Length: 379
Figure (cartoon, rainbow, N blue to C red):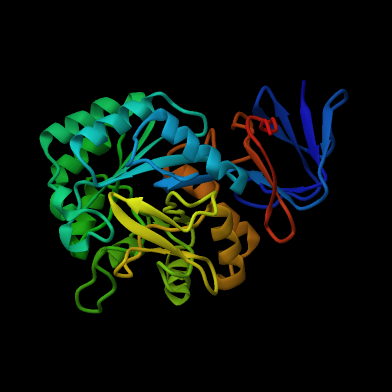
């Protein structure tokens, strides 16, 4: 049976489609229409926007747990369930720099394909200690032939596999081998020059991880990774839009330079989806600091340690503080990250054949309801 969603303006991932209803059949989008077909089951919504579920490329934790603490399918499922009420229906659990044992465990867990988890993001360990951020520099190391073989072999079982690495820790020929194997290479936690970054892009690196954070920046005589990302038209960039990781002025600069290949990531940690004010990150205490604006997460020395952010909050921040239109802000949480992950046929769009993962947003862009494969979740 076809189900028709009426009463909210559909956002198809790229633009608003007023005067249309969303048709769903068998858990997939059947299309958009001016009126429901005869015999359709009708779901009437009280206004607002009906958008694809959000797609988050970088999620370290949620629901009180971190992937690094227990890289299992059950942990991934718990993280996904914590983010779903906030509008995110597909996410990549993210393992930050850790041991080879933890990395292998995360790859095996992702191969189980928990609901709402189309793949895995390995943020390290092939990162530059000089740009460690909240990562443990003692565990950082260069990319090796054995690592490439491991990631290439795991990619098909995992689904989508993103590996964030620093160009100075990975020669272009190894980046090229990863890219040929279908691994999505993203650059981050790096002190590389713009030339090194561009060599990595030419080898097959597809994007950059949390633009501006933990990377060489915009020096006028020594442009670094951030400058290379902003001036390379084919390169994608994820960015943490919470007003803490990147100042609003710099976010507006990035938006002006890169209108179509910039998307939001949460970089979420364990407290997201809970009221917890603290947790342990690889044994180090992290506290949630509340105040004006969105909360922030800090180590004892004030270093930012991931984010207490979800993509719905990023969308609302972008509209209220950056001057983004709802269309543009929503695209950066739906169609754009899905395109980066090569998932446009199944996620982030309201097109025939895509998963019917839907979110109804109010006029204030707050989440009202979420459907997974066209069905409301169990309470």
